[in-house]
Amino acid sequence: MGGPASGGWTYSRAGVNRSEVSGALHRLLREVRYEPPPSRGRRVLLPGHYAGLVRIGRETIAVTTDTVGTKSLLAAEAGRWEEVGEDIVAVNANDLAAVGARPCALVDCLSLPRPDPEILAQIGKGLERGLRRAGMMLLGGETAVVPEIVTAYDLGGTALGFFPRGRTPVTGSQLRPGDLLLGIPSSGVHANGLTLVRRLIREHRIDLASPRAGGSLPIGRELLTPTRIYTGISEALADQPGTTAFAHLSGGGVRNLARLSDRVAFDLNAWPPVPPLFGWIQELGGIADAEMFETFNMGIGFVVGVRPAHLAELRRRLARAGAKDAVPIGRVARGKGVRVPARGLEFSGY
Image (cartoon, rainbow, N blue to C red; front, side, top):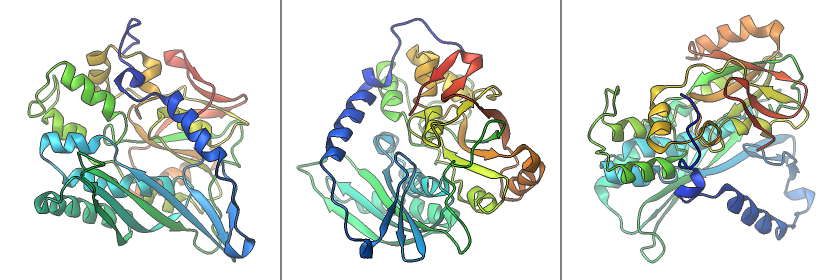
């Protein structure tokens, strides 16, 4: 898998311009300055991190929100909805896990052009499966029928987590050069980059009911594989002295590591072989390596920072938590940003 010639597909060409999104979000946040009195809670400042933290009395609460994005359009095209129901839980639970919070509850938010009982039943089955895997409860939510706003199902939620007594948030502040980075494999593309993938599928008139070359499942089903849930990994390691960071590699790919600290560099000098699905996507779109690694998870969905002296014990705990497939992917180094030396890639930040 190598970088193709210039002129290949990019996320921006498919309709998602990261710079435009960042600029527009900056304008929004510049207008939001209100801070309530301390009696309403105190914000824990973690700019750009995976979940927002608020201190209420002696307790710290983690909150995050996310959607499955255009994966819901793929679900509609394939006529399968359980997988994206599970993703509603996964995309939120994993961001809580990335700060070491114990996931507690979810409220879903479904915006629909019209309610279809069969589709909602399938989404519900997926939600149930995701909640069980993440150890969360569904508190309620909002189902908005808004045909003048949306023409397709938009599926998301907001999740709440907390820190059991004695646990402090895992923010990456303890990272230092020499720490090792362990990667936990993803289950596929998860819920990121689907705008680009779907554009390529349309461009090449690919049948979602047929497998890709070398694949065993119909490509529609392979792309819809639910996002792997990493809450068990976070729970197993968050209280351990050798754990220095967690990262959820979602939208933004390996650049997500830069959200942990701007005082160190992340040298991904042992990235494992990229799963064939990503090679298929890259070849289909003539996509450059840099674009692939900053759009997709490229086979690793969650990263753990580890002190070398604690590696053996933490790997044993990972295995007991269902992550026997954890692999070394690199180490923390002096400098700043994220590097993938084998591909000649360097990203200055998130």
